[in-house]
Each structure stands twice: as C-alpha cells, then as structure tokens.
Length: 244
Image (cartoon, rainbow, N blue to C red; front, side):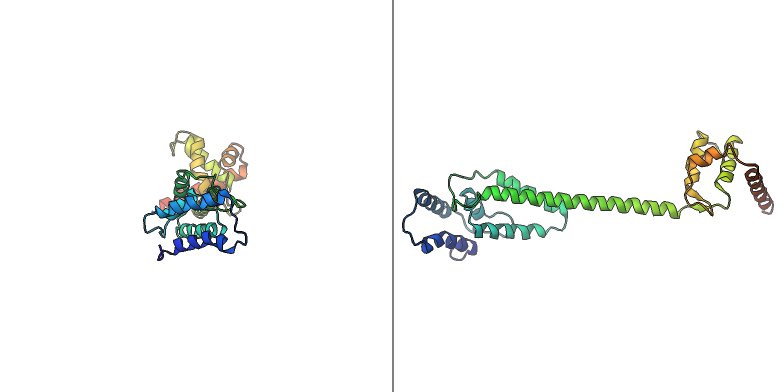
C-alpha cells in the first residue's frame, strides 16, 4: 500500500479532516463511515490501481460513496484522458457505455457519505458519463453529416463535370430525341425514359442544367426555326458519315 500512489492519495484525504479539525467530537455517522471504509480498504487485492478504467480501489470508493472533491476530480481527469486516447468516436462511445454498465452494477451505499455537503459520487459519475456520451454522439452525428454533404457535393461535381455540351438548344435537342424514339432508332420502355436518361448529361452554350421534362414538353411545340436547325444538324451528320 505504501508504494501505491492512489492508495496513499486516498488515505491522505481520509486523514485530512482528522488532522485539520479543531473539534475532537465526531458524529456517529462519521465514525461509522471511517470504520466501514477502512474495513473495505483492508480487503482490497493488490495492485489496487490500473491505467485503464476503474481500478478495484475506485470500485470500492464508489460503492462507499467517497465523494471527496479532490478524489472525484482526480478520477474524472484520469478517465477523461483515457477516453481521449480513442480518436475513433465509435470506440470512445463504446468505452463510455462500458463504464456506465460497470457503474450500474455497483450497489453504492448512499446512507454512508464522506462529505455530506457534496453530491453522491455515483450520481455525479453517472451524469458525467452521460454528458460524455451525448458529446460523442453529437460529434459523431456532425461528422456523419459532413461526410454525407461531402459525398453529395462530390457527386454533384462529378455529374456536372460529366456533362456534354451540345451546340443545339434544348428545344432542338428535344426534337431529335423525340424523332429517334418515334422512328424507333432508340428503343426504350417509354419516350420519357429516353429523355430522362440522356438530357441530364447534356448542356448547351447558354444553359448548364437542362430539365428533361421541359425538353420533352417543348418537343411537341417547337418553332419552325428549331425544326430547320435540327434537320440541318442531322444532314451535317449524314454528310460526315458519307466521308468515312
């Protein structure tokens, strides 16, 4: 015990009120508390401390409601540093939940208390861990949303970059696509499916994003000039093919 820093720390905290008190009278509850906690500490198996999680010393002190402010601060600082070592939020959350599970199994005797003016130790720890869990869950949700936004953004950029620019207008494109369907040059389950499959990947010199519904509807009410340009474009393609 003399070589265990945590045990020495706890013993010093227990002894401090006895050394500092000017009044030699102690209440029955104080005497009972000291008797019970000394009995429990004497039962401890060594070593009593560890670098990860609750030590068997911590478990005894939590059960005995050793709600010393100094010990509480030391405990949550140690646990907090341990949790911060997990950069993966899911692992950090998992460890926090593990601690909560261990706390739930501790049958703390709240009739006994080291400092009646302080909150019960197990109640404070339960609140502290619930705060850690909420923080980890909120941070994980933010990271997930950032990943979703980044994915959507990259998908939009990829789709935008994959567009092919056509020198024809949307109305003229609609005429050609309608004709390929009705002439059965392109076979699809519906004309709407042809427009939906092709138009989103096309752009014009004056319009980056085309609506396939608008292009399709305009193909039924095209102006004569649009028809002429569409025919001239197809004839240009025919002349080019003849040169092959």
